[in-house]
Length: 408
Image (cartoon, rainbow, N blue to C red; front, side, top):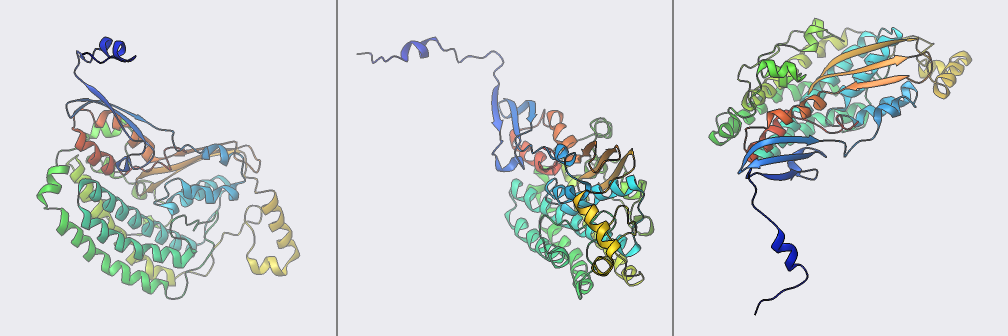
């Protein structure tokens, strides 16, 4: 006896045969290895990716439009929420853009502190990359080791500004706080130990045959492709392009510091992993040079520009004119001159810059953030084609994208 129901005619008319013999799967937007709210639509021939379509926008918060409706100082804490793994790099890139717009010169002590924070920030970001990338590929123990050192670095940030993730550690015109007592000693201990720990990570991974099989010749980016798709940072340097904004267009104290820009001509995921390891050593080298420079500076933390920057707290509490200026700047905001500016910086993930167009009002007429992860996520539509589904996890993790700065 044949059993039928109302769906039987529907199933009888279905044709499951496809001439192209491919399958479409959704990787994300809730997949843990998507590194954010990305919906990656993959067309597979067996396990081979023949088409890749990255879809973004699931985390969109309209940050650039918010910047156009907030005064310049009000917007600064919002930049923490872009690349939230490296908050200070966003704070600094935005502050630098505004400072160049209004022509501020930052005191030298503030420059020393800012450069220290930026390099600690780079170490924090690279450790997070290593931990999560290794976990994606299957190396569980590296995650625990890397997060241990990252906690020490985050302790330094917390001791300075009180926050561990969203720092707001930079101000337009300088920094809000001097280094606390004993902070430099703690920093010296951390950077003395860091190279040894990086060696531990390398002992676990660099010659590990499974790690090499998963990364070697995977996610190959030729120098021409890297330039064509706007790759920057390690994504470009891993393809043999020696370009680092700290060297090409120095800001803060980078022109006075001795450090190398590691590059690799491997053009694959393994080469980019090696560069992350070496960059942490270079950051430790930079911090080591900055420690004695701090003692040679005057204890001035903010630029003197009453038209744009509030006076020190002591003056606000004792001088009527300084209090009035402070009141106006807080309630109405600064009024930069009419003009436009773009200031690029070398964030841990690549070129991060802010374009600001001012019409002389307390609000930016237009603000645009040039975020490296946006370009690297877009390149996935080309980079993943011809690789296997298991390699997609490796490649996404290796590009080190963060969706806070993509869906902005």
